[in-house]
Image (cartoon, rainbow, N blue to C red; front, top):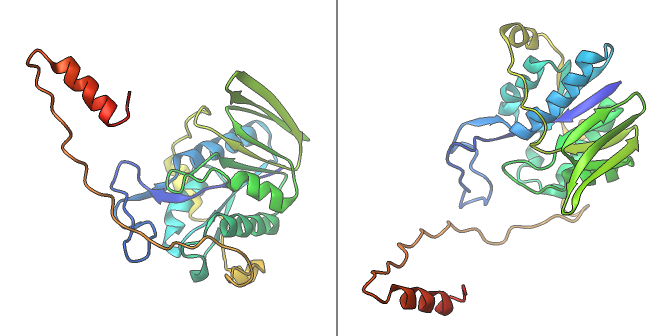
Amino acid sequence: MKIVVLVKEVPDTYGDRKLSLETGLADRGASDRVLDEIGERALEVALSYADANPGTEVQVVSMASDDAAATIRKGLAMGAASALQVVDPALVGADLGVTAAVLAAAVQRTGFDLVITGNLSTDGSGGVIPAMLAEHLGVPQATALSSVTIGADSVSGTRATDGGKAEVTTSLPAVISITEALPDARFPNFKGIMAAKKKPFETVSLADLGVDVDPASAPQSILTVVSEKPPRGAGVKIVDEGDAGEKLAAYLIENRLA
């Protein structure tokens, strides 16, 4: 079985996350850049299956800048057999539609039985890439799974709903996305880190994939205005002089909070 896992380099959530006021894009130099945790969990699902089923091939795929290679290589150190990274200047600021089309082309290039992704990244938080990817690939999707069971010709899992939970199953090939309910990812050990340096790591461009992202050829979202978030105000202090309840009620009514 061939399992492809989508991973992504993102700004560390423990650091500062800022937008460039000139481009409107994330300032990825404002903090450390790391492999998104939800992508690591998705990779753990694939690696756990591979551990129990010899002959399973796990490959990580990403779309990122050229200097993200070191971050993506962590997936190889964790245990993936190979990696493919899409790098192209035309992809700077790519919207969700373009991203899905490019990732689909990359996955088709590698071949797959199952694609595993996180439900949403910590930077864009779009949450639609798994569904869009399945549409491009023409395969079933099972998204937002809190548990996953992979079989020889099908995949099943549990999805939380407002009223409880739903059990979903689909045949392979398919695309699934997982939530943070899945187990934490394993840490790369020294042996894995050293082995990662010798594992296949392919870098491809849009031309290699045969994908056209010219705005004239496909609709894209366009950023028109970007501004810095206004500073938080000091708030209102209510001093209790026997009438604090009345003042609080008045404040809530005035601000339409009651």
